[in-house]
Image (cartoon, rainbow, N blue to C red; front, side, top):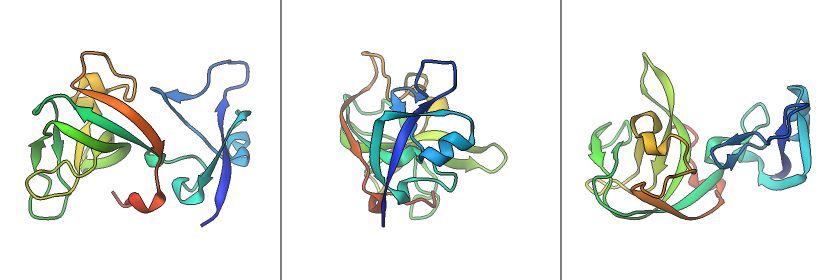
Length: 168
């Protein structure tokens, strides 16, 4: 797949960059201009086009964080909707994991919700756990975390598009 230049952006007349916690939002220059915002040309990032949505903006999963959970049972997450423990609520055990911000539909009546997908955190059956950000107040502004949070971020990187299952 092709690499595309993307940029952070701002609303005309406002100096702040469009941030989601500390995870900046990027878009292609035409996409940003189409919504009346200004691309910040000194923030250029070369990104695989598979990490962009149909509108030309980054999907939440474009960054992967390396996290360390200080203690077990700090957070509970949902398993995949299919598989041996379909949509079970399990505790995340202490350890080191990759994690990505994402969106997932837990209940059709409430629609999609923001969550943190913790890769390979399902100790019972393997696979990932999705922690709803609205269930965990200290994660609401992830990756901006309080020092008392049950996890710490040890780094971040651009996600390899092959790591992301865009169907979930």
